[in-house]
Image (tube, rainbow, N blue to C red; front, top):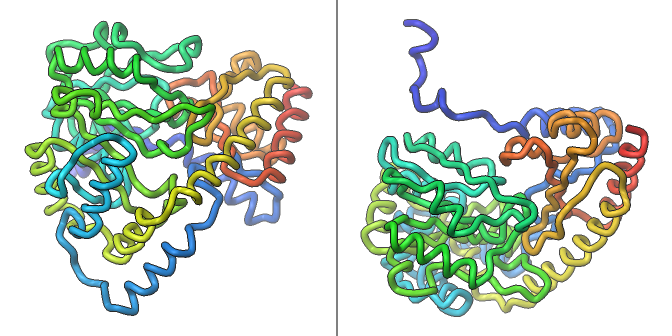
Length: 391
């Protein structure tokens, strides 16, 4: 058998992560004793709350270690429904909820359940790295829509209309956004919802960063705007960012009954249920008051303000102020280098690890995560500034 026929054709269309080489090199340097400042992290640096850990330990001791229903326990799904109602004005029933192995898994399930071969997905660019690859795995076609920095990296309904066509099936919407930190406001979402209803475009609304939001802005779920857009929207969320539970792998989605039924069948034959112990931990998390989440978001806001102030005084780099999430998407076009070169050289020459923008759809940007301590931010910003001055 020829080598090029050993693997499935669909995987030949999927690009490997551009961040892996940088991450691997950073880990290698760290193992050699180098003092690496990590600005690459895509997860909160806070520990998982104690009540959540306690609930997991109690679940193990009680023997809650067997299969659960594929789509999650009824106990957890009821709490997710209550959360959607309280935070997002969404009235889902447990039959409209699927709990999966992280929000990424939820998004993949939605994409795979909706797209037929050759159908198109609208993806505002910059985008989270996995969106186009998920579409390609489903044998769909990613339609990337450039979002201008002048509009804080948000696309308009008019731009979506321009890029949509007879094969357009879904829109992947991420607010607050990774990597740009943009947040879509009510008026913008109303226009986008109107277009999607008119053209019968499904919306997969990735709201995983909803609790990490700044400047008095409020997260608006597009599915809450009216019954018509609700019937076309799959709302995705999870516990990774809000409760610092990235490794626990609990995500969830809510949506129309027929779509949920298809996603349930898909999960039946892929992963079955999400981890039973993590589901008990998720119950404890969703039962907690919002104080812990608010304290974490407040600390992120301080870090954001510090980083933006530092970057604004540096040569050859600019940034927009992110309104949500914990990343700053920096324009490095004035350096004359592409994002891979900047990332690679910063790691080699300044021992600062960050993510090149090429993987997010813009080779003129880098992504800096401020999900690390103020001490690390100060050291990293000093190194970044010194490096830029020497360019």
